Image 1: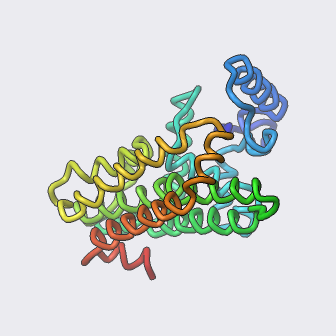
Image 2: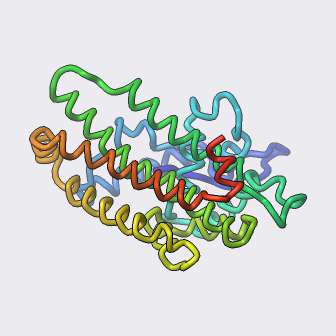
Amino acid sequence: MFIVSKIGEADGVITSQLRHLDAILVKADLISAIRKLGIPDFDADGKYLGHYSVKEFTGSLGAPDDDANNTLTGRLLLFLESQPLLGEDAYSDIIDDVIASYWRDYGDHAEKFMPAFLANDILRLWRTFCVNYEARTERDPHEKKIEGKIKNYKLKHSRMLTCYSALLYLLGVFKLEKTVSPDHAKSMTQLTPTTRLSWLLKHQEFKAIHSVTNQLLEKYAEFLEKTDRPKDELIAAFNENSSEWMEGSYTFGDLMFEALSTLGEQNRFYRLIVV
């Protein structure tokens, strides 16, 4: 969960409209609310319950510290799979500002715009997820190793779907329209990862990937069913079925690759994604 605020001017300085102390109060209210509801505490003792201004998201694009400051993850999860709990108008404005940063060259290429900037950032996020998993996963003792494998299993389903459903959607739009506009991008942010796959199924122009897309949705539903259980039960089930479950994660990746490569045939935007 992230807290994202618009920016404004105070004493001649451009700054977040949500002051630091007010952000602390918002975090405290969120923590109190989930405890009252009996929801588990935020992961990592609240480490990732961050507050960012939209300027931090847009100003860090391509910067060396984008990942270190967690703005890469925050910006793209905002873009790819977020829903506002409060402040829908502010949320919409923030999304527009992020889109404008990625589409900064759109005016000169409106008739054939390929959102390579965004696509590269999505791929960067996916690779960051993968590298972080390898670097941070404990191999000992055995229970920690199993927990690490479960994280890997989830990475190869939910995180992969988050990133690659967006790339499939963008490829699809480009194939239909020969360009991808800011309005197309805004529409994508309003779809969940699975709904982006369902969008592909609505277009006969993409019938070559309808079968594999349906398989992706079915496999993802199976993944959700397997992992929707208390932690201890999940560890026990994974320990008993780890080979089968991990093989399923590779199948999911193979299906995603098939969908992407098939949709990308004779698509110049796909070439930019790959090379």
